Amino acid sequence: MSPTHQGPDLYSRAEEAAEAIRRATGDPAPRIAVVLGSGLNGLVERFADRRVVPYSQIPHFPTPTVAGHAGNVVIGSVDGAEAILLQGRFHYYEGHDLRTVTFPVRVLQRLGVQTLILTAATGGVRPELRPGNLVCLSDHLNLIGTNPLRGPNDPRFGERFPDMTEVYSKKLRNSAKEEARRLGVQLVSAVYACLPGPSYETPAEIRMLRALGADVVGMSTAPEAIVARQAGMDVLGLALVTNAAAGVLPSPIRHEDVLEAGARSAPMLGKLIRRVILRVAGVAPGNVGFSGEFPTYRPD
Ligand code: HPA
Image 1 (cartoon, rainbow, N blue to C red):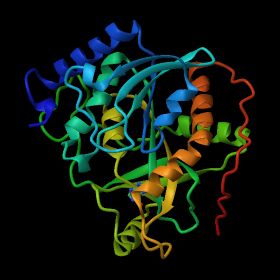
Image 2 (cartoon, protein in one colour; image 1 turned 90 degrees about the horizontal axis):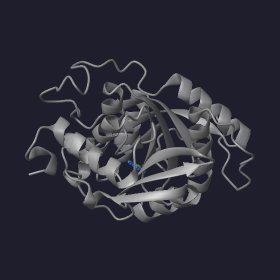
Image 3 (cartoon, rainbow, N blue to C red; image 1 turned 60 degrees about the horizontal axis):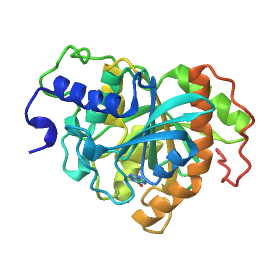
Image 4 (cartoon, protein in one colour; image 1 turned 30 degrees about the horizontal axis):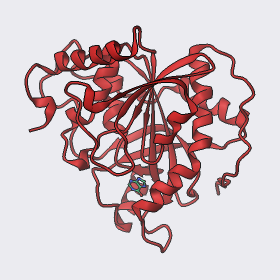
């Protein structure tokens, strides 16, 4: 049985977990949080004054099972602005139900987080997208086949039927685009198709996703975004294209390549995230321009 289905109700479990984090790191918690996806865990190094709480020391927290996913809540700062970083996330394909997958977002809600930045590795469904491209999620297709809000609703978390018209905040998207421009990094808008995995898609499935209006495909993010919206958070989704989706190129998709491409592009994404954090915190960013190599996106 999953850890979030035992003992006290979900709200109390989230509160107990939040309390453990508060005790370990000091009160009050930052109001902005970042979930780090596959290959992006190294981004924590870009934050100073880090306080680390392993998931294993937080009551009711599940433990990640995937290589490349550490398991820590980290509180760190960039130029004086603090953020909570979730180093390692939970996925439906690991066997967790979606309430377990999204439990950390509930804990962030109890900690008072108002802005959530979700990061992810994705496959490029749109043929022009190449490994190393960075996309800003404009919307998603939840094709997991279930919903994290399924089951009894605790009104202390939010509404039974929350609106999903603007899952990914337009204001945050505009901010991210402006900061990307300042860094000289291309940030393309993309609709994210969320599939259960863990197998990568077939070429026929990718053609189907393209017909449905998807630009990128992944196995995370959408359930967390849904829960965060129910919680009233503003959500920003930043995704790296780590590979061309199945059938776009003749080569097969290998998990090692996905992780490697994620790690290669992480510095660029890290800089962008730092600037977005500073902007949300109302701090003027210093000169943190990006000078590394990144592939150019060329629309038709
Ligand atoms: N498909 C699904 N999830 C992914 C992919 C992909 O091609 N690349 C990285 N995450």
